[in-house]
Image (cartoon, rainbow, N blue to C red; front, side, top):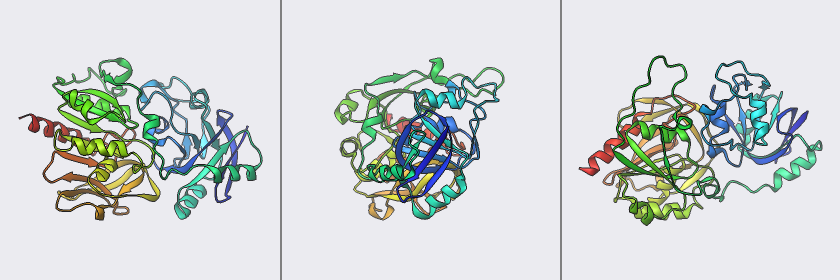
Length: 380
């Protein structure tokens, strides 16, 4: 079948359609990761976005349950150079075409993704419509111009868990051990720390990483009050990644202010942005965002450069933070975006990028260990 991507500025890309015969709407962004397309599909931070993958061949190793970062895909649509309707991996349980069709996600393939990415880099992220139903490009352009912008939109309350639950790492569907590892897997440490994790659109691998640091994790919905969290008597509080603009998520900012100094806090991605706002800072929207698994980030204290995974359209303005209270710990070497902060007197730190990766490099896994040490020190 045929499919069309129409951008709000009138640019049209036509090609072959896969996945669902459907029409989707959202901001069009590009991701430069070389592997891990299923983890990208199922990352809740992509809610409201049509994703262009720069790696030319997508779908060739199929999909499987272990690689999910959520219970379903959250991308609105997918654009690729080549999309494989077959899979060649022994781990595959379902071909990507059928998997995306099952969840009503349309795919546009056989287009010049290099031209599309250059267009987005030059003009910035923009609204678009991907359709395998409508054949009139101008009608789709008009629809793209009518889509609500991501700016000012609270999507965390849309994708968050509806009820509180305990994360069980011993459940086979949550384990996701290395499929290529030989011999027995190392035993999990004793779970002697209790973390309450705010779900703003959390990836499963974050929960796995916390469990591997000896944490029992209770996941709570995004709008859970600070008082309810403290009543659970946690050793630490985690603020997750998530989609949308952080500024309208005022309920989370208020809760963070009530929790600061009372328990150790660690935030990632949207959680980092919400901490910045709770500290009195400001956020702004990047021209085309950071989406990929190869961003060089420098630790300002050690000078060490980490290769990191990113997925965010907004960032914290470092000049808006009080330097007497907040230390700037990590900087993106591509564009000098603030990528990490730590409070100078309170047990609170955060990073903009994804130390749990999935997909991506593991250079920053140590941050989960830092959180564990912070909680242990606070208990003493």
